[in-house]
Length: 452
Image 1: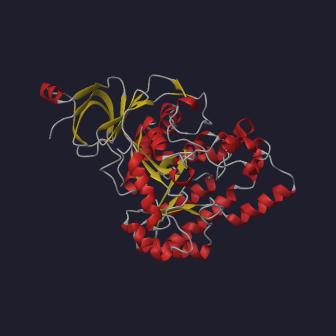
Image 2 (image 1 turned 90 degrees about the vertical axis):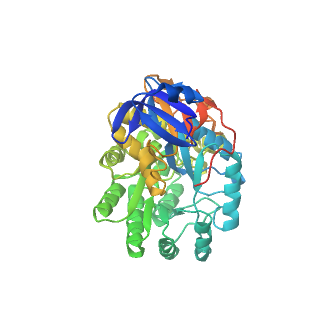
Image 3 (image 1 turned 135 degrees about the horizontal axis):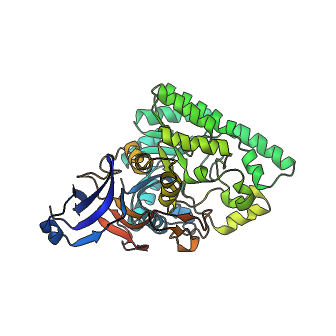
């Protein structure tokens, strides 16, 4: 097999540790990882990239993104969303299919996939979604390649998807289990939230903190407990999206200790922001579940270190400034969510690895390896290994840069990380051996990304 590209002399992040090595790439795969580079290989390669002093990582996998090209392409489309991913060192995104129309049947799913195949520059998966009316046809979505159903909303949902009540949730878990797929839940209790929200509004509360206080820790704790119970009874493999509380973390830790097949994730914004930041950033930090207090934030970092939390994701959701700034006057009117797929890796390298909150091994697991395993794609993806897909990103840990919204590829014209100084900004990203981003420029044509 011919060598097409060589990454020379980089600090390669392998499961066994970081070692200076050369990586040769050909036919979309990693052909070799070697300490020394023969003249023959170097001469044969179409291109040799000097990576001296830089860190070579497996491409990131973001298990939780929203790219609402169908229905909301003005917010984000598959081209801008995946260019943003590539610029941030992410080579695979899982899109939750919550578009207009959503991925609740075969026809809608095909529309989403066809659009993605035409525009995406990184590889991708697409989730199926649940309503009370489509439970008997989930098998058809599996035939189209669906591996995960979710985000199943246990609280308020987007307009295109209903909130799933307990009877439907239990039946959905039974169906998903029989199909040997993963069930992913947005775990917040709708009764607690709706009651507190109405109380807040009656009291005239429309400030940013009202949103946090209407969605307290117990709302997440109760919903996770219920989801774990339903999953145990049905045998379904469970994933809990955007874990945000210490109480929820303890429930998942206990379930794992008892052998239950459950995974969870934390978003970058729940790791890096806390309640006090809402006073400064207000509606730009509005998200569901909300930003929590310092004790929860500390617990989430500890959960990453212990291995209870399996992934760091973004819940990437691009909203126009107009949908955010209205929240300064009335937080209930602001949209919930924020963009993040382009900033996840440098933020975690800076605040996690460089600041010694997590090890580089933990970083590799939560950014690449564990999501690949949960998707059933490891070791094809998620690791630097001979025979794996050449999904790679090269980052510079010595150069400090500032995050600027105007320099990102997403359509979102704002970021809560504006002005944040980070190291580890990607300088080169490969997807299946093809350079898709180099020195801050997207060099791949739309359509390079493949569906998995």
